Picture (spheres, rainbow, N blue to C red):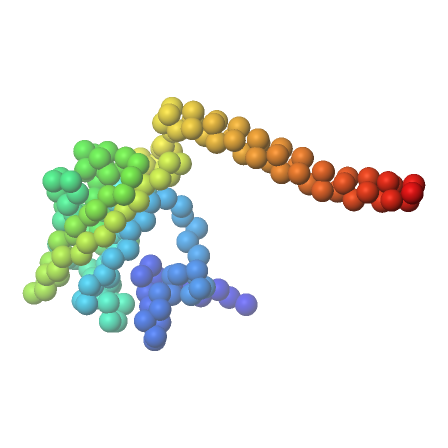
Length: 184
């Protein structure tokens, strides 16, 4: 049996996303991802490998939008996204832009697209979590996250120990009652 693979953002006849888990396509790449669409265009982006990689297609037909002009804005910073004909994607590789974007948190992005005679604004949110690779392939590892992680681990052990004690008491009590009742 061969597996079907849908392009990022592709949808089926009912409008469902084919790259969603229920559509049969599972992303093997982890890390920050953004998806957004308008009536005309759909955009999927990934922050990884030293760039923000963006695929754009027409919403109705899933036809890729090639050789357009794309600019991305985040917190007052603007960066052009160059089109890569070999991959069919657009990429932002501006170091200052990527450094700001790689910080942990939810980031609102505005994409300005011009494709032929058409232009559109697409807005979306990219969430960068602790442990995600940043634009340069580095994993976020803040020292305060380690301290919180250690506290969380201790708390989990304490909760687990308390639950184990309750379980043991629940198992031992009926046996003690049987022993006491059989002695009467």
